[in-house]
Image 1: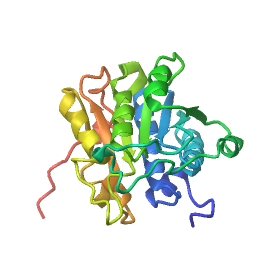
Image 2: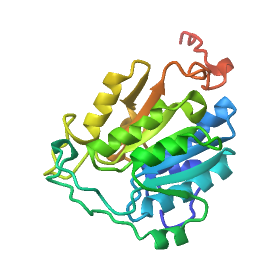
Image 3: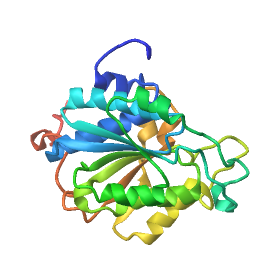
Length: 257
């Protein structure tokens, strides 16, 4: 079914028919929130592009979401292009990652992309420059596949951007908070440590798991465990109502039988 153009965008998201259902869900929810807030365009970002399969898929999902929901989705990928850098910091989990892992064939990937933007270089330098641009739509989805604690710390600085660069809530996928058996992920190392430290250092912006997402899925899957949402509580649009028609939100007393 994943190989066939089966169903609407909403159906394909609900049934996990996209090869990366986590990306589809994140983009879908970001676009729906933007539409409810009257925002016509958002940005979806992948930090850690590696070979490029995820960015290609994100580009496809973004196009489907734009067509179905009516919100344009710009896609941007950040990567060094040279694979993982050297690290001797235990927090980067050098027992499972090594310098040079996940190199990119830049020319081949650029030839595959149609609309996505590829930003190459050290994220510590490229992300601040990116956020200075005036043409950036509010970020609505972020995928972090940077592996290292140190790199994730750098990428989370995107959530220090001003309100006009972020939706009040941003869907986030963290690829490396669940690892292979030998990794033994915990919040003293890796991406989980970066998330914990971010939360500890920010009073009104928090990265939190999405409670109950696993149980809301039609098909049981592992990826909901890696989905978080960035909440900026003091965002000017945070309290804007985006739920169902208020007229339908009443529960009349059932007649006695």
